[in-house]
Length: 460
Image 1 (spheres, rainbow, N blue to C red):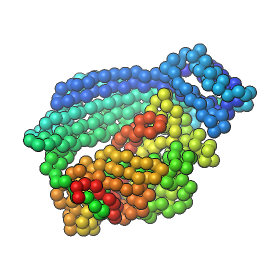
Image 2: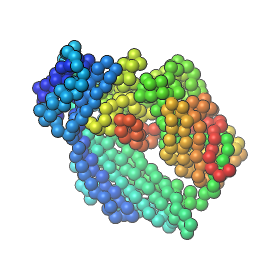
Image 3: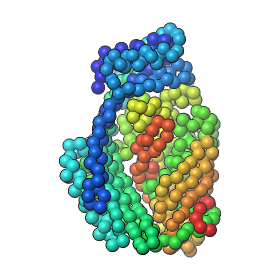
């Protein structure tokens, strides 16, 4: 993306006043977005974003700047201006370049930007039609296909020269059901580090019918009662609770500042012995995977919790310096406008031995959270609040009437200890995660689990 001579010149300029580390990140991103509302195209947009970011370390101090002008003159000037904020003399040298992650992780069958908009629109139209055909109460659909092709170059003074092409595609479908007095919606959004072959890996029409089913089911649901009770959380996107309430608290972004409830607890029992939690950026074609992170460190499978014992944090280069811990391939950023920091990739609770049928049958009275929604969390305390998009009452070991308006309220550390069943049906789902380094694609996942007691908000 840039000549080696240009990159070397930029890094040399960055080291002039005593920086002990310098990094250049260059990115070109092409994005296509097609949105269909009620079987009519609402948006057909394409964009190209190109730029570079430079990062300098002076001890534990970080300086970061970016530009969408990647000419040699501009990047050298930017590096010199950044270096000039510190008065000193040169201490470091550029090490010989090498590729730390030389092998590709994903196989892309159909590059999405080679597919005609008409062909993409046909897929969306078929999905929309399937949702409308599910029930006459479906009043609106919104189907979207987004594809992103990102090329990155990461070079630093420790010798890393890493180039990568990252292709991601995602299909989302929202269905709205209406009655004379209310509206309810259902939503699904499968995706992956794949091209247009996504549609051979998923059944878009079946996804649309499922979104319609959720909307119609919730249309007639009763208000959820409030109180403390056992809660069974379904697999797949149910993993968003672990991601938000626990995963963010295991990122060095919070741990290094002692702003995490799990800081200083390596080797301690922080969860039920039934819980093993993993963050794995090496899963081929997964939504949150890449062969290297945004510092050029190869991604890897990080066991965060093993049989309830805290084994690892997610660590980036700078926070690793502060913690005296090696990076774990977890540094990520939305684009060149953001400096990288530790983030999750594909994070999930590993499968256990219980069957879903057993978990439900062993729950005499409680809540079944079939489809989770969004929520909020404070990493320092682990306190969270999550909406449940599709919920049911469990009575005498059976799933009964649907409930709406349910929320789950608690603290991540307490919920981890109260998981008393872990199912054998692991599933992952896709989402976007926001933090200080921007919005990034992440997988969440889990098998069905049961929390023995949690506060359920509703009408009580």
